[in-house]
Structure formats: structure tokens, C-alpha cells
Length: 110
Image (tube, rainbow, N blue to C red):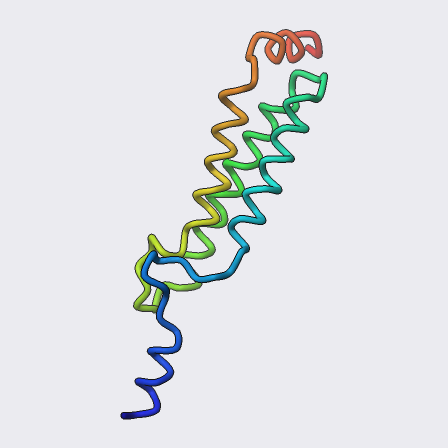
């Protein structure tokens, strides 16, 4: 066998498509705590702002990951797990936030 084949086999992913790296699980737990703390916060604009920040961050992350790995043979679906997780929590923050107090708070500032 050639040396290149041995290195390729050593870098293959597991059967379920994920490596044994716990990074995505750590990010999920951290985002769960951040969203829960924002939900318990008394100010009505915390959850909408968190949602805007998370959705924007996920779009930027997806763009950076796609641009950095544009020449590789790895499918794009295997590189966007973290961006998908971040946008999921951005949507969760938007769903659990109540829009009426947020709109009243914005109107009070004007």
C-alpha cells in the first residue's frame, strides 16, 4: 500500500458521520445555558437580540467554513454542524421570546 492510502484511511470519519470530538456537544450545552439565562432575564429585548446575534453568527460561520474548505472533497453537509446548531438556538430564542413586551419597550424608547 502507498503511504497516502494509509493516511487517508486514518482520517476517515466513523460510520455515523461524526468524529469522536465532543466539541458539538459542548457547544450545544453552552448554547442551552445561554438561551435559558436569556429567557429568565427580565428585560424584554434580551431574547430578540440574542436571536439576531445567533442567526447572524451562524450565517457568518457558514460562509467562512464554506469559503475555507472550498477546494476539499468533503461534502458541505459534514462541515456545517456547528453553524446549524447556532441557527437552531437563534430560532429557539426567537420562538420563546414574547414580542408584545419587546415592541412596547422599543416604543417607549422613541
